[in-house]
Amino acid sequence: MKRFLAALSGVLLAVAVWVVEPWFALVVLLLAAIGLWFRIAAVAAVLVVVGLIAVADVDLVVCTAAGLVATTYLLLSATVTAPSGVVPTTIPSVVGALFFSGCAVLVASVPIDLPYAPLAAPVLVLVLCALVLLGVAVRRNGSRPDPAPAPAAEPTPAPTTVEAHSEP
Image 1: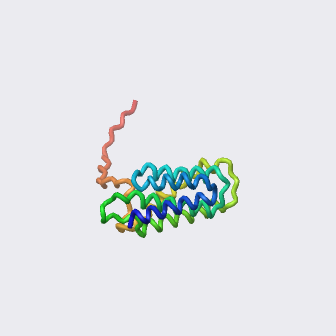
Image 2: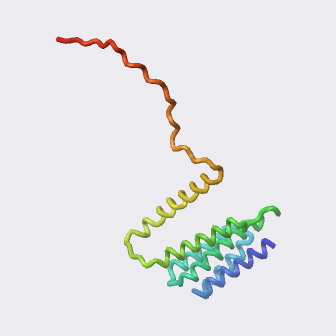
Image 3: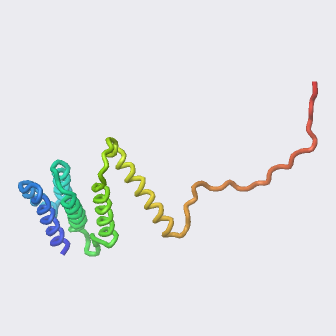
């Protein structure tokens, strides 16, 4: 069943490419078929799709669909040779793929023209992911992480009443 679903998602990946550039669909289909046995070919198929989308003038919906299909294909093809208990598509993986696809559509649909936005975007994504993961980690175990351990409170020595003053 895993091999069938991986092959089906490979065909859907080729169809997503066919919408943009029909000749590249044959390359992606061939790499996707080989990718069922060799993982490097599966990665190469997805990289061809990513490269084609980066170069071609593609609609936002096609980009999102190709990204979701590529994610599904990589998840399924990576577990074709896995033991029988391994489940490639879990609820968190599907929700994560849909969530980040929605975020990508939202960000790409904002009409903003900043010259340094492509440089700042990866840093912003990493910071936001770290904040989200920190929030999830805090809620899961019910405690807040300690930024730094508090020093032990020791009593301060009492001031001495006799002070030696030397006057010249």
